[in-house]
Length: 316
Picture 1: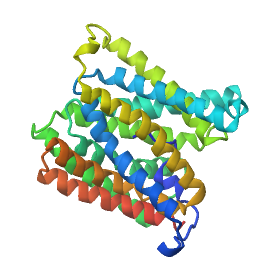
Picture 2: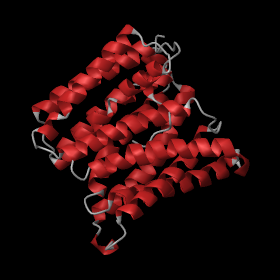
Picture 3: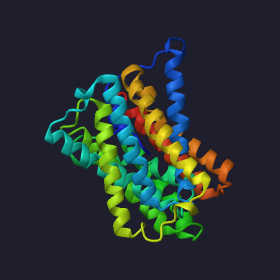
Picture 4: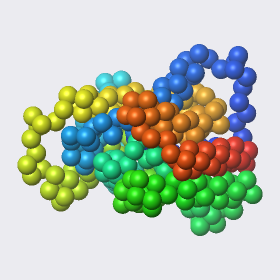
């Protein structure tokens, strides 16, 4: 869930017909495959990282490290001038970073100490529905398809909460993920309405650093530093953290940002309903996470709702 501050619904507000597969360069399909698989796998990476790492400290390490690395890459490829922003842009990036990475991703990291990674991904898939609701609250009338998609998404969300209500997973973890989706939606929605840095890579770097510092603050308040024993952290948790930094926060984001400038937006937005499927499959295959009927049924309903929202909004 480390993505630029752009939501699927807002990406597709203008017509962008999808060319035939023969006209889409191979590089686009490679980049799209990276976004599909890597972002879908970050939920598994988070789940493995928090097996032996404090949640918010691991998130802080991930985002600060990735943000600093991205700043270095920007300065190397585009020159130090590319990092210059004014005070309002910096403040806006910081606010969005806190909403996305502390309220959004941070709560998901905490939740995955008790919630299966596949279930977390399916709960997060409802984000486009929240975005449509936010837009409606600001006077942008949704389409009929968008309304139906929101209702489907919320219905699927209700079904997905059943494992928490039945005691199969901790209901507190489910609630944390739902709150995280609202924070992520607000951050995504706000990013298009406040003065952000023009360079999306620069904006992302500042967002990650602000979000990482925010996660560190939450970790200190929670007391995660007390009794921290680095030698007790498993090798697979360190490997998962490295994967999240390099692949989740750098490579996949770069591929996504390139796709936004190269590929049809309607094609790029399909990650919103492919990522949860990848996450559920990996969780079941790697961690043997159970696929109960509420997870399967709720997941199908949510993905159907997101598909409807994305396909409807891209035609407006």
